[in-house]
Length: 105
Image (tube, rainbow, N blue to C red):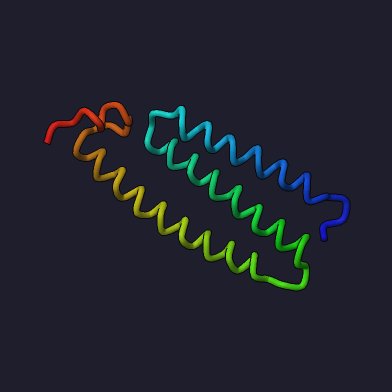
């Protein structure tokens, strides 16, 4: 338990971060901005895992280990996505979504 902070307050902050990520994912045209929005979504989910673990099962650490595993997977995902974006930039000279969908092979 965290003194002075309820589970609802943590979940509210997590929901706000999640929906900021969803909004950014749906409205941005830059591939880097879309990648950052996906990371916001994943971080909101990680905060939920830790919050539920701390408040519902204070003696267990399964939520914490699952969150660490998820962060490791997210780091690998970012490395692959950045490599794809750099390769796409070398090919098209832009990271705009609209310009990458119109490219000729």
